[in-house]
Length: 258
Image (cartoon, rainbow, N blue to C red):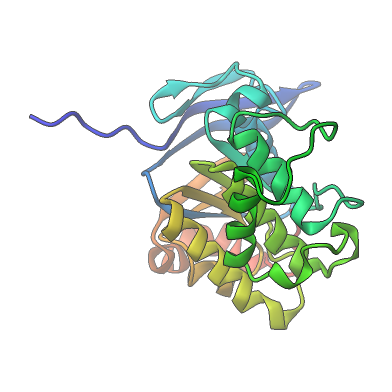
């Protein structure tokens, strides 16, 4: 009998209280390996806070988080990163004064057993650089290798962040509003980049996104958050038909924010 494959991410009874206020309450979520899952909800629902807890930026007051069957509830951000958890943020976390290539090369340097030191920076002929160039080709940024990351468009910054995730070889990827601020003409390309990220690496993707039409055409399942809890977790079609979701979220999407 074959050994069951553990879920990529299992969250059970997750709660967070700050100063007596309940931010997250009894959050349960089970995500299969290689799945692309969306997280939606109105302003203040707890979506970004949930990402902060999963990535280790915030510590929960109750519950557990398992990554590929291993308990990571109390581990540090670097420990989770080394275990294969990667994340993007609503605002760019790139090094703006470093070039496009240097940003990805640093990530590749770490994945090849190095660190983020700039003192012994790899040359363009080494393994980390070759790895970085491959990832930049996948997102279509090879024509901007020497451009400072702070000088490229917002849409290209999002592509660069995906290249960084590819370079770190993350097994679980958290994307926090990847389409935010991206020009409409760049959205389709970014969606393709996310699909390629999952297809090429087999990673599990969990993403918060307010472009509902884009999200529903990309993900396999959707988790709906409301008042710090997940009130539904189902396929996009069933989520759109769910009366509870329509009442709690879809009827009040105007002006929603993370």
